[in-house]
Length: 634
Image 1: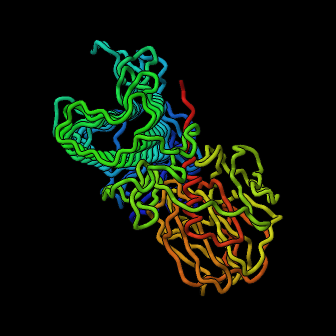
Image 2: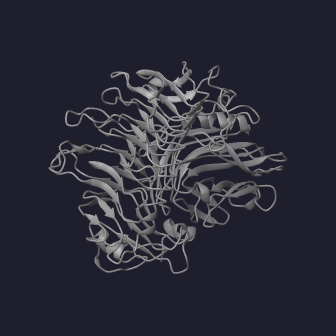
Image 3: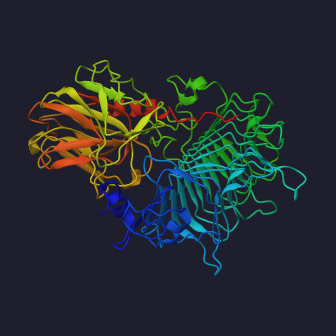
């Protein structure tokens, strides 16, 4: 029987014949057999697990260290899916860390067939970079490989990702790419390697990544001698910092980012800071033909060596640069090395009044001259956090990666409110940040991990684990707002949170999402005015700030928000008809049964007041800009 934890993973996009396999570093009773849907008899190696897979199948790798070199088609053959509806998925087990120490590569098979429609998710590929004479690529992709997605990976190598010419439609989403070091090669007169990405692909996407502490370039999108390859790529919503420095072994990292080959490449909504590039290199250099560079925040780079924040290379043809915030770099403004026919507009060079630059919060304060100072750019309809541009609607775009949302923060919480921030990072209890004393107790050992916001979060197993408070009292009929960071791979029979109830009229909880990948928010009788729902498929596999609101008995609004944006609402609302006690995160007990949750949760807050749309957007902007910045390895 497939555990409820992963039932939704199969329902997301898999055909009827899709199968779930397991690998564990310690092996099992039948460690080398392809036994499906049986976590108690995992295979002993990733290579063996991969050999069992067919289109639509998933391999889940339990936490541990795997000293395997996964070099396709030599030591392993990665199978392919047939479409994004039936991919092959190779993923770390939720809440655990599976570490591959010898790297992995993929290219066309011996019969010339390319790898395609494969998802790699939640895996750590960590090579030893301490010996420059014996260091390799973390993940390499070559041949005509296409439609491969890397999601929520943690990658370190002497080059983290090396993506060769001929590859296409690659996706790199929500990864940590860091720690690339130099390699001493007898084939070259200089040290090589040390890139976060060395990418020569076409029609590919780099989105929402954290790129840091790489000795050379953080992102190197360039193919020597070619003006046509490396085209139609998008680099957006990334945080790029602490790259291109001299570690004593390499003195050539001139840029944190270069995007200087091909045509129609886009670079927007990125935050680039603290890159002390060697010599006077710019943090970001643009070239190629018709590159688009929009709404980036580029600040605090080259302060030691005098480098510029943003540069147009001499070979750039018709670049378009708009709405970029370029401030506080070693050399002011945008440097033009002789670009042909550039179009540069609405650049902001003055002090933009960041919220807290010292803490790397580069959102704008009220009164910033960058607010409403931009031009409309159709390619950039939202900001780095997914907030719609412009704010308010009908106004002008802001300059930089963050769109300012007006309105003050919500008032202080009342006595029927709780907030579990999970900043403890360990232990069996979580404090109530409202001061109301509703301490949460971790039951059956939820797994602690690095927080999406702050220093900690918890992941539940979907079968026994949850956080509870038995001292809570919720008054019938009143309005409510629930906010939480949420990350789940796919829908299952989940109960993200809930108050205990025994009749349908008293429901108070949510599936985020259910097994059909629909988010259901129930507050009161879900048969009448107590439910609102929306398809949550676009929000799977990444951190999302959900806000669930109801104006209570006889009210005129209930709604579901994601990342500050209203997804679904109704013009009537209900509420529980009886007072409720006992409130859980990771479990929902109601008249239909007990539902556990397989997801991760951070900064959960609950209040007996219906927040306005402006308050929800403001709160999202406040918490979302507290991005995860890894500690430098230097």
